[in-house]
Length: 229
Image 1 (cartoon, rainbow, N blue to C red):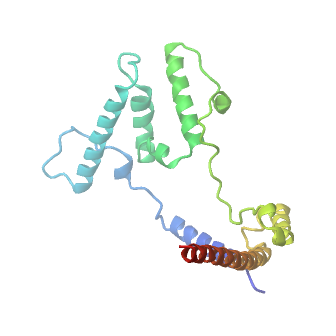
Image 2: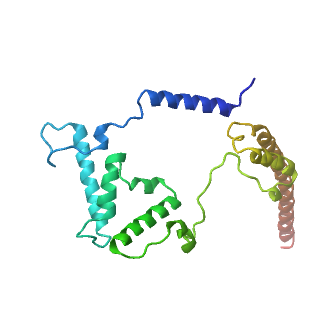
């Protein structure tokens, strides 16, 4: 029995992840999860790891202070994101909550900003909004987030000679969403690629003939101009 390449790769990857999980590789060191206890001043015999954590904590406080100046003071200077949420989750997650804004999608950023807005308005006694309908009230004009797929759909009107192969690949994908992941749709996908390659080569030859004819016409016009001088 010949197994698809995707199945073998997926099996090897899962086995490798299980080995790492049971050997404790994914355990996060406690020094990176919590801030050092004691005074803010470093001792002379402080270890390099403690110095790094202290520097990171100071930089985080500077960022929080700079961010707090952008928002109105709430309850005698306590800021929701900088104090209640960011500092608490940073100790639990090992990094700042602002990190998700750099790696998340536009939808995640929209929900985070809406939740923060509602938290501020709740403490100020103002009206809140429904975060599930924010996209209906505002349009950023940037379109939906990109979705990565293994075998992207090919428009039929752009590839007339390969319509049957395109439909066969679509039927394979629609029959079961897991078929393309485990490589069961590789055969119709390869047939489609071969058909597209043949079509590309055929169109290339046709365009080459047309370009040569146009070049011959231009050269003939130049000859006529030279002869009439």
